[in-house]
Every structure is written in structure tokens, then in C-alpha cells.
Length: 267
Image 1 (cartoon, one colour):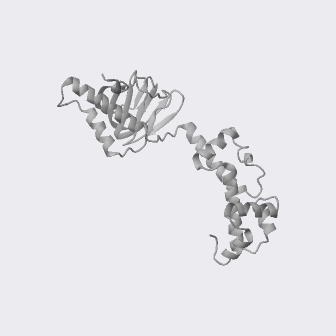
Image 2 (cartoon, rainbow, N blue to C red):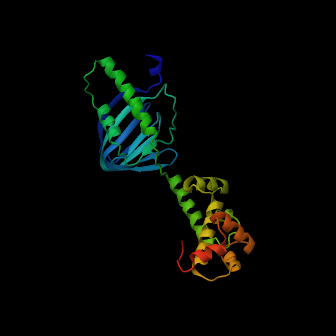
Image 3 (cartoon, one colour):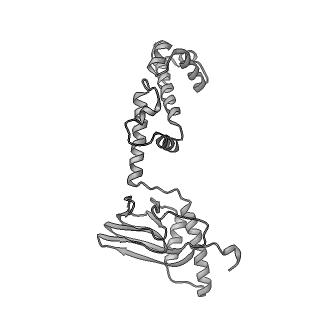
């Protein structure tokens, strides 16, 4: 095979299968599997205690030797594509499959259907090479789709991120350090700080400042509270620091902002 075609997956076979039993115990496959759920529902359990629930139109990519068990809640019809990924410049995690919720790309769905059909108008050798290329292209397209994996651990992290966000919103006037938002959670502050920015595209400190400035805007627009009182109510150490931060965040001073917005409500 030419050098430009060396690094491709080897297509093994494709077919449709039906899962009707309530349980399929722990097992593994020495091949890569692309599984598309045409109908039905259930969940997949993994040895690291993660669980992923699935439904119609979901898709899994299992790396070789992924140990898993399946529980069926509604009988399933699945499209199965088996590959040998050896030679590809890509790696996977056998403990965490690639999971796509609600695959709705018509082109990719048609490719899955074509690869699951055994009939071909090409010669056996040509057909084999074409399927290898198509399967490789399909695999990379699917891997480029951002996965949505909400394992038990991930759900727990997302819940804690929401708790931190709510804590900052409800206690912004009396927080000395953003680390206070994580003190009651059984998780590393540094890890949660990293995940917070990853999820909300803003650091915890920046979010706290945003909440304080937004509340200051509301007070300036809807009350005659003095600047010193606004500073205290919004959690700033003093009026001078509040005015400095307000101007940096909004491009104007609290006094000018009040004159512009008084009588017009919060902007």
C-alpha cells in the first residue's frame, strides 16, 4: 500500500444487531467498536465505576479491550462497525469511551449505514481498501465531535461547580477569598478553580468581581445609597478601591454611571 495510505484503520466488519436481554455481563473486545443506537435505551457500566446512560441516536466508540457491561431498559437495535486501529496516529482510553449524544449528522449516519451493509459493486480487494479508507475517515470525523460524557464522577464535579457559582452569587458581599466557596466541598481548591474556568470561561475571582460590579450597577441605578455604602454592600474594602475597580470594569466612574442610569433602571 502506498506510504500515504499506511496510517489507516483496518475495517473488520459492520452489521446490525439487536439487544433484547436485560443484562449483558462484563466483557471486552480486542477490536475497536463504533456503536450507533438506532432504537432503544439502557446504560453501560465500566470497571472504574462510571456509568453512561444511552438512548436512540447516541453513539459510542469503544477502544480495544474496554471492559464494560450493558443493561437494557428498552430493546435496542444497533449499528456496529468493528475496526483495527493499529497504525493510526491516535490513541484512546480503554477506561473512557468516546460518547456522542444525539448524533444528527446526516452524512455520518449514511456512512455508518453503508459500512454496515455487506454488498459491494467493487472487486473484493478494491472494496476492502475503500472500506478501510471510509472507516478511517468516519472514525476521525466522529472523534472530532466534542464528546458529552456525564459519568457519576463528572456529574458530581458539575454539581459542585454549580454550588460554587451559587455560593459566590449569594455571599459576594462578605467573602474575603474565593477559596471560601470551596471550603465546604470535599475537593481540591486548585482542581475546582481550574474546572470552574474551563466550564464558565471565567476565573472564580473574575466571576466574583462581575457579581459585585453587577450589583453595584443595580444599586447605582435604583437607589440613592452613598458610594461608601454601595462599596460595603458589594463586598469592597473601601470606597476608593470600589471606585477604582468599578472604573476598570466598566470604563466609567460610579458617579457618572449613576447620572446616566438613574430613572432608567438597571442597564
